Length: 158
Image (cartoon, rainbow, N blue to C red):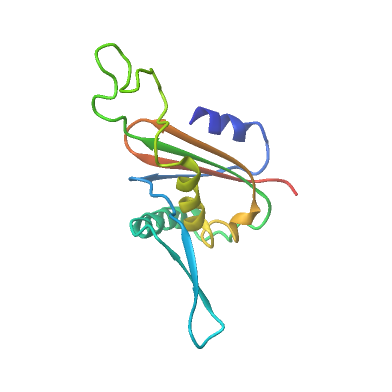
């Protein structure tokens, strides 16, 4: 998480919005689109059913943090730090994991980019107008307790 804060501290722009959402982050899943028969409409679905409640939770916490402020409308710098619990018995007596390595980072699934996609989707229309506004992004996945995502958003000077 310190790396994310260091990145944001390097730019003295608009103060950052910092939001912490506790819980198990869910990946956005693959998007699938289909045409609705008899119309000119297309419906997009997400194949991860567990992502919907997570996205609602992220949107609610972020909406509270926005406190009625208008949506951010310019270029954005965003960091997401996903904190995951270390598996029980991750390190044996010799300090190595099951693969025989000493790793301080969760280099296993889920993919940090897919985790970020779910949070980006949840923040669209709540914090920013469109996630295409993100021009700098730092994604971090680390071990810790409690399980959470720390979201930091900063508007960049145009």
